[in-house]
Length: 306
Image (cartoon, rainbow, N blue to C red; front, top):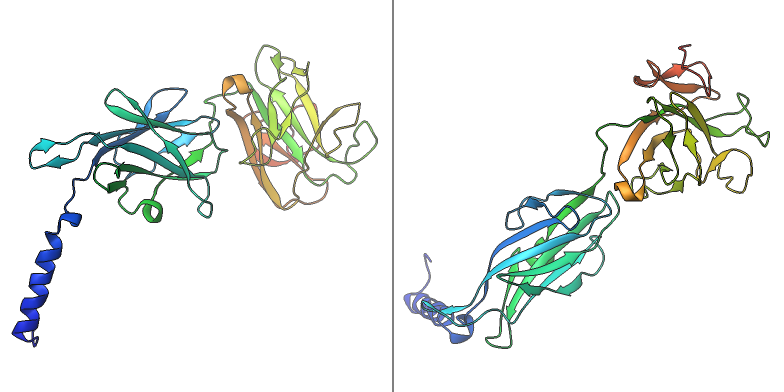
């Protein structure tokens, strides 16, 4: 404090020392020693840090948060556990945090964050308080709402799939008509296996945050090495043919084939395409396995390059 009068300097230092040693600022405070999170279904740890690295998880599964705390102490003497430990979370940066009172299970406090759709960023933090006994509270991370931990809900992806999205057309004006005589967007699925595959309960979607956008109806299957056509025309009331409740964007997008609820809604196959011209078919080349290329319009048959 260069240039500060000695009396003022002494007063400031004494005031700081007084406040640092004031009883109200030196009450026993509980400590959060570790925060672990894991998938509620798989029951396998996916992080073992104190809210530092945001882990990836999967959609449609709650997350269990467990907290280890250290009771407040005076000197070397423990003076009891925290009065309560709470978990706060929100699935959007601009919404209010929801509070869950965590339950004591042996040496840990445990709480659960519900499942959220893929693509959601979940923010969360922990509060351990001894307000009733000492009037003190601890947060992890220390800045609580302003510096909360977070994780991104990812998409579950299957390692392999017997059925693939094999061909599609996003701007169909005169190529092929649906059973109702209309020219609509369409895609073709191809079964690569030697066995019939049941599609009942599977889904098609063009939204990462809505993997179950359109469900295949009952008794829908695709024969061994066979093909099946789905019209993407929002015409769910049509009696003939398969008609999904969404259309393809001529400006490009992602389309996904998603597995059943009982198998965890894994993405079985996904294709990405850019802006499309009228009546141009995109198909995998080589048929059933390669990347999308412009092909001859061959719904229900093997792809052929233009």
